Image (cartoon, rainbow, N blue to C red; front, side, top):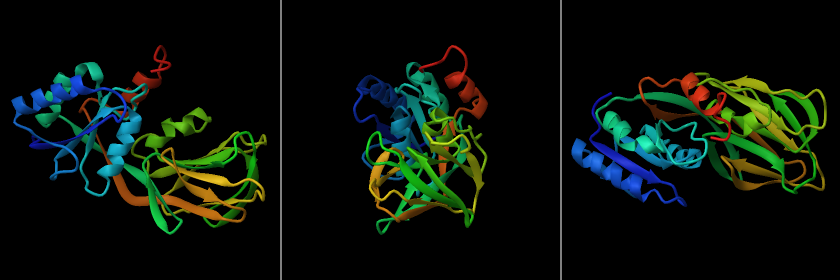
Length: 266
C-alpha cells in the first residue's frame, strides 16, 4: 500500500486512551502524517483506539467513503483490531509507511420504519420482554420455513459471526466469504440449526407473538420493535467494510490469537 499522508482518529467513548493518543501524535509527526479529528478532511486510513465496539463505530462511519479502518485494541476481545494496545508505536510506524493490507467484508441491510439500516456485524430480532419467548416466522429465498419459538434470531456477517452468533453456537464464517449466517437464540426445539445464506437471498423475519413485541437491533443498538404480524427483510448490502490489518495477519492468525487455547476471556 502507498504511504499514509492523512489519518483520521476515532477513540473509545468511555475508556481513557489519552496516552495512546499522544503516542499516535508522536508517530504521526515523525512519519509526516497529518491527523484528522471530528470528521474533518478525507483520510487515507482511519485509526481506531478501542475495542470491537469502537471498531464497529469506525467501520460504519467510513463505510460509504471506502476509507480502510485499522484498530488498536484497548477492549477485551479486539478480534477486528490489528495492533495490541501495548504495541501502538511500532505498529503505527509500519502502517503509516504503507505496511498494511485491506480486507473487504460484506455488510447487511434492511428497511425499517421508513429508513434504510446497514449493519457491519449483525441484525438481531429478539424478544423485547426479558424472559419471554417469541414466535418468529422465517422465510429464506422466498421459501417459508415455519414458525419457531425462541428468544430471537441473529443474521450475521463473516466479521459478525465471531460475536453474538458464536456465543449462541453459530458457525464462524471465514473472512472472504460473501455470505451471512442465520442462527436462532435459545430455540425451543431440537431441530433448529444455523444456516449460511448467499448474496442475493432475502431472509424475512415476522413476529407471530400477539402479546410480545420483537426488538430489532443493528450492531447491538435498538432501532425499533416489530408488532404482531410485522416483518423485516434482511440481505447482504452492496457496501463493503474495509478492514486494515498488518500484512502477516490472516483470519486464522487472528482467530487463533483471540479464541485459541489459553486465550479465553481476552
